[in-house]
Amino acid sequence: MMDKEMDSESLAQFIEQTDAIAKPWLLVQLRLKKLQENRANLTPEAYETALADIHHDLMNLGEWWHGREDEVFG
Image (cartoon, rainbow, N blue to C red; front, side, top):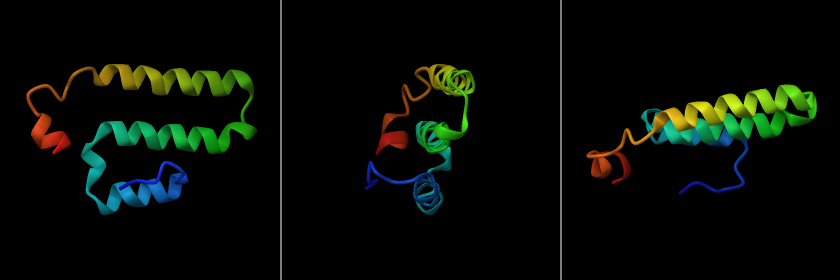
């Protein structure tokens, strides 16, 4: 199971080792972790823009999993 305190490198390795590249919510989590780690290097505006972009992509996932619950989450 994933440790909620993973850094982006550990999370990327977890995704790779578990063949979870097809799990888009984990890719969103990886993007959020990378953004969190890089926040100190960004202007507030750049951070907000990047966060809004990630949020937009997350919302576009919609309910793609409907009818595939066992396959996706099983």
